[in-house]
Image 1 (tube, rainbow, N blue to C red):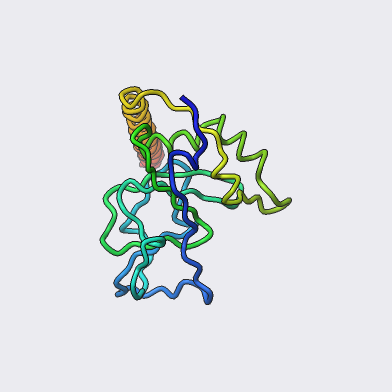
Image 2 (cartoon, helix red, strand yellow):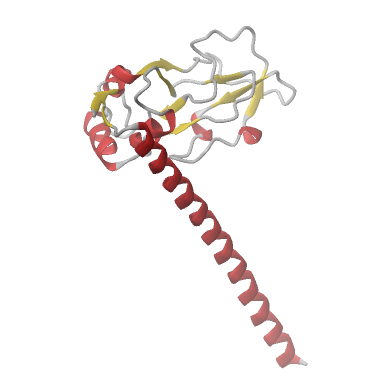
Length: 193
C-alpha cells in the first residue's frame, strides 16, 4: 500500500523557545532538542535536558509512539519515542508525527522515513543551500509505502536485531583493541626487564 504522511499521521512543530532553552537540572519537564536526535537511534531520556515549563499543551507534549523528525541539517531522519516521561516537550524545529491510522505502526513510519526512498524524496524537496530544511508541507506530502502490519512488525524486529548486532560488534572491537594494546604494552615491559 502507499499513502502520503498526511494520510496516516498528524504533524506538529515543536515549541518555539523565543529566548532559547533555559536548562534547569531540577526542572519538572524534559525537553527534546535537535542535538538529542541521531538518525534512527533511540532517544536516551536520561541524557535529555530539564526545564521548568508551565502547562504543556497537547500539540507540544510527547507520548509513547510519537515519531520525531529532524527537519534541518545534513541528516534528515526520525525516531519513534518509547518509554516517555510524564512531562516531555518537543522543541522546534523538530516535527512530531502522531500516527492516526490502524494500517501503519509508528516504528515502521520512523524506520521508513530513514530509508533510501524517503530520504531521496526529502532531499529533493528540501530547501536551502548551506542549511537544508524540509518544510512541514513537504513532509506531509512524503510518500510512504507500507505492507501489512505483520510484515511491518517483522521488519522492525529485524532492524532491532541488526542494531543490537552493530552495538555488540562495536563493543567487541573496542575490547579487542584494549586487549591487543595491553598485550603489546606487556610485551614491551617484558623486553625491558
